[in-house]
Length: 117
Image (cartoon, rainbow, N blue to C red):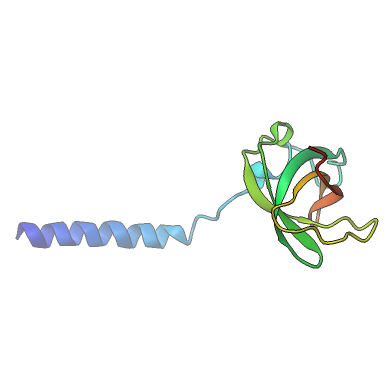
């Protein structure tokens, strides 16, 4: 009897958490930009350093250290390549200096150059 009761409690716990999972959406806006600012208002460029993890035709994935201006921890994320000038592909593992802004389309690189370290 005790085993049956334990089974029912565990089944209920898992089924209720599964049902609740569909009602709660994930909000990642806390990593987006300072509160109260739209993408259009956030025009100041952020400077950082990083390492290239993956290169694609229109974007690059970079691992970067914490960015205190945005309250970001160290992470790996994808940025849109600069649109102002064609960018030659840099090899995976290249240390880079970069600047970016947030646009409605995502995080847009303004500059991306091999690090002068």
